[in-house]
Length: 462
Image (tube, rainbow, N blue to C red; front, side):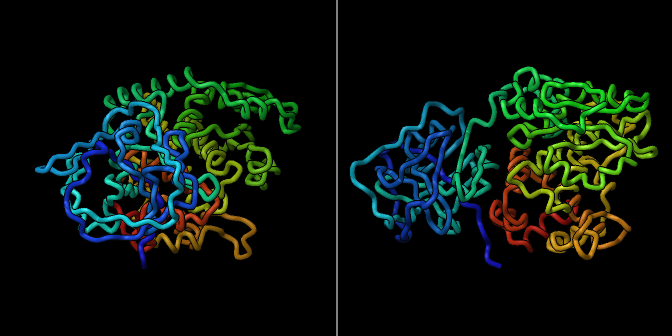
C-alpha cells in the first residue's frame, strides 16, 4: 500500500547569502499550498512572499530564512566542509515573512541539492529521502515529516481542512517547570502531584467552562455537590456516596488538568456519583454527548479497597468527555476511545503514594501483562467495535468475542503508542485521533505508515 504522509511544515534556516552552494541532483516542480499555514500564530502569505511556503509531493515546505528558524527554535550553520547543520535551540523573536510586491506563480521550479545535511547530529542522505531538502531562490527548504516536527524539534502540530496547518514551538508556558520535574521522574510521565498542582495554580477556567457550569440541569436536583476549580461533582445523600466524594475531592482538579495538558484544551465536564441501578445510565453515552455529564458508578466488587479504584475511574470517565467533545468522534470508535480511557488513568496514579497506588486495580502503561497477548490486527479492531449485530449497544464481553478482541487490540495499540514515543508525540496522537475523520485514516496521515505498517509497529509488544 502506498504510504500516506502527514502534511507538515518544514523549517530550517541559513543566512540568505550562504545558499549558493553545492550541486543539484535534479529539478522538481513545486506548488503553493492551497490551505492556511500558521507558524507560531503568524499566517504565511505564500502568494506574496519572496521565499514562499511550498508544497512538494503532498508535503509542506517552509524556507530556511534566518528569522523563521530562530523564531521556531532552530539554528543552522553552513560550511564547505560540513554542509548544512541544523540543531534545536530556544525560540527567539517573532516571525516576519519576507514580503514581495510580485505575485508568485502557483507552480514553481526547485532543485534537489547534494550537499551534506544533518539534523541534531544525524546525517540525512538527501539522494535517498522520499521528501528531500529542496533549494529555491538561493534558500534551502527542509521537509518536516512527523519524525522532524515532533521527534526532533518537539513542536506542537495540528491540521484540518478548515484551519489548515498550525505549528507551534511554544509547547506550554510551563515548559521550564515541566522539564525540571520531568528530570526527576523515572520516565516520560511528568504528571507528578506537584507538577499538576502547579498547573491548577496557574490555570484559570475558560469562559466556556464557567458558562457551562452556570447552566441549569434538572439532573442536579436533590443532589449534594462539591465544586472544584473546573467542574462539579454531584452525589446523593448517603454514607457510601459521601465516602467516594471525599476520596475524589483532592484529585479532581489535578486529574482534570492532566487531561487538559494532554489534549490541549478544557473540556466541559460534570461528574455524578451514582448507583448502577439508576435506569437513566442505560443512555450514558447520549447523556454525555448532550449534557457533558459523566458518571462514576459505585459498584461493589469493582471499587477496590476503600473505594480507591474510583480515583482511576474519575480519570477514565472524564477522559471520555475530552475524547468526545463537540466536533470529535471518539464515541464512534470504541476500540480506541474505551481502550485509551482504561489506560490513561495510570499516568495520574503512578505518582500517588504507594499505599494508594498498590490498591488501585487498573490497566496500566506500566504493565503489559495486564493487557494480554493474543492480538488481532488493527484493521480488525476498527471493524469490530460494537457488540450487537444491529449496532444498538456496545459491550466488551463475552470473553474472546469479536468486540472483546477489538478492545484488546485497542489496549495494545495505546500501550505501544505511549511506550514507543515521546510524550509530545503521544499528545499529538491523542489530539489527532479525535478529529472528524475515520481513525485509521488519521493514523496513516499523521504517521506516514500504511495500515499494515501500523499493525506491525503497534500491535506487537516490544
